[in-house]
Image (cartoon, rainbow, N blue to C red):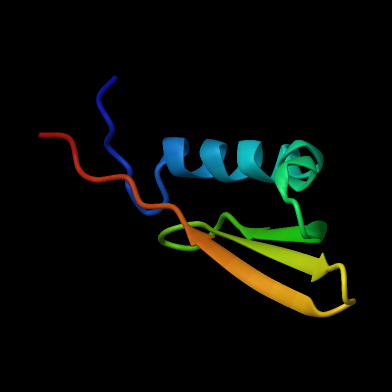
Length: 73
């Protein structure tokens, strides 16, 4: 597959959507917190998936995953 569009690329967008769709399964893997929700910005140059968590003490935490496809060589 030859990628001609990188900003964002179809692979970046699809991966961001897949990651967000797996939030329940990912949340089950955490031992001390759970995912409360996820947000994605798939229109950005490099899509970002934001993951919002709550730990057992009720504290909130925020992770961000930026998805970058390296150019084909």
